Amino acid sequence: GENVEQHPSTLSVQEGDSAVIKCTYSDSASNYFPWYKQELGKRPQLIIDIRSNVGEKKDQRIAVTLNKTAKHFSLHITETQPEDSAVYFCAASGSYQLTFGKGTKLSVIP
Amino acid sequence: DGGITQSPKYLFRKEGQNVTLSCEQNLNHDAMYWYRQDPGQGLRLIYYSQIVNDFQKGDIAEGYSVSREKKESFPLTVTSAQKNPTAFYLCASKGTATSPLHFGNGTRLTVT
Image (cartoon, rainbow over all chains, first blue to last red; front, side, top):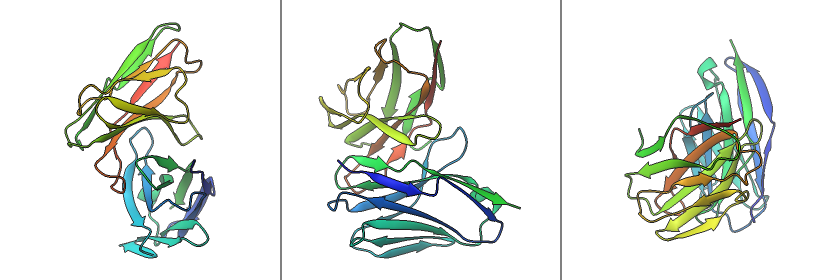
C-alpha cells in the first residue's frame, strides 16, 4: 500500500517568515495530493490540493509543488501569521483510499 | 457544517462495552471513511466504503465493525475487542477518487 512520510514533525517560525513542509510517497500510481490544516480539537480542513498533471499550484500565501519523478511534494506558506499555527497533514491517493502523513505542528511566533 | 454530521461530540463508556458512533452525510457522496486520531499519530484509516453494502478494512480495522446499509449513513462500532479505544474518531466522505475528503467534526471517545 501507499506510505507517506512527512517532515518536519514540528516547525517554529517567526511571524512574516516562510514555512516549508515536505512529504514523500511510495506509490507511483498516486495522482492526488491534498494538504489539510487542523486546529486544536477541530476537524481537518482542506487548504490546497494538487493533481499529478500539475507541477505547482498557488493560492494567495499558500503554494504546493509536486515532483512526480522524485515522488515528493511540498507545502509553502509565505508571510506567516499567528493564525497559521496548527497541525498540517499531507496525503496521497491513487484511488478512493487516502493515506496521510503523520503531521507537522507549525508554530508562528509573533 | 459541510454536510457530515457526527454524533455525539463526546462519548464515555466503561471498558468491555460496545459503542456505536454515528455518521450521516447529505453530500450525496458514494465513498465514506472512518479515521482514528491519536496525539502524534496522524490520521489512521479504520474502514472505508465506496458503495452501499460494501466496505473494506483500513490499516487498523481490528476491534471495529461498520455497516453501510444506506448511502447517507456509515456507523462505526467500537467493540470490546479494541484494546485501546480512547481516541478522536473522524468520519469523512468524498465524491470521486480525486476529489477532496470532507470531514465531520469528530467524536471524542473515552473508555475507562
